[in-house]
Structures are given as structure tokens and as C-alpha cells.
Image (cartoon, rainbow, N blue to C red):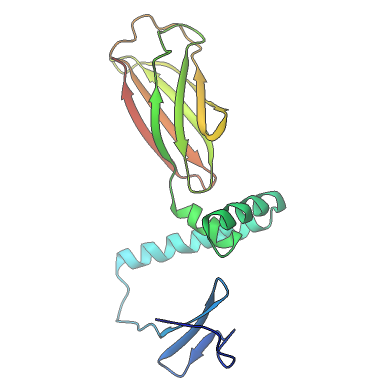
Length: 189
């Protein structure tokens, strides 16, 4: 791959030249590379990846038709060095949210006790769900956390009294705009 700088003849070119060379544009630069070669039948993994990429581009096209969402993607793309809002939306489709930490120090099994969650994404987390289970597997409660400050800080207020919470399991689920889900379990000590 070569990057062409300040060449009046090749600046702005894109497309195939003969059978061996391909010019493309990326971030205002002209990039020259060898043409891709097909090596027989696609594997099942390649077909699955092609299907995921097709869905990612469909997702991005829909997002670009929503002016407010397109503007948000454009802003984040600029901050993160992506060439466009569209590219940022495609990347968002492939990236699941992450759950960083759960602070349970203010949870004592009483209604209103707070759980603090750190959840983040390459674009943004759409919502966070909390489920609390007794150690026998029965559900104590579940609900949605709310944003608490920055885009990555979330808070959940308990709605059910739970006096026997030692050994209970908390399941945190973070979802992003394309619908990717990440789950993380924590056991109360």
C-alpha cells in the first residue's frame, strides 16, 4: 500500500487501474494498493463476516437518515478520527459495549439503595439493565439503570427489600444503539 502525497496526476483518483492497482480515498488522502485477489470459494467464516458487514452497512444507512443521530455520529467520528459519520456507525455495529465496574458499597438490601455502574461503548450505551438473583437462582428484582453524570456512569436504585443478600448475584446488561449486548455478573459478599 502506498499513500500518494501532493501529486497533481493522482490526487482524488479512485478505482481500479488495469488488473493490478487500486486507488481509493480515505480521510482526504489518495491511497494506492494492489487489487484484491479472490482465492476460490468463500469459507463459512468469510460468508458469516460478509453477512455481518452487510447488516452493519444497512444499520449505518438507516442511522444516516435520522438527522439528530447522524449529527451525533458525525461528532463522535470527528473526535475519534473516523472519516465520516457513516464509518462511525458501521464501527458501532461491530463494537459491543463494555461494563467496567459495579459499585455495590451502598447496597444493603433496602429499597432505594444505590448500585453504581460504569458502562461505555465506542459510540454510546443506549441503556443498562440490572437483575438481582438470590443465591438459589430466584429473581429478586430487575429494572433499568439511569444515567448518572457522564455517558458512562449509570445508577440503579433498588425497588425491593432484600435482607438476605449475601451471596446474591447481580447481572448487569449493557446495550448499545445497534442492539449489541454485554452481560457481566457480580456476586454480593
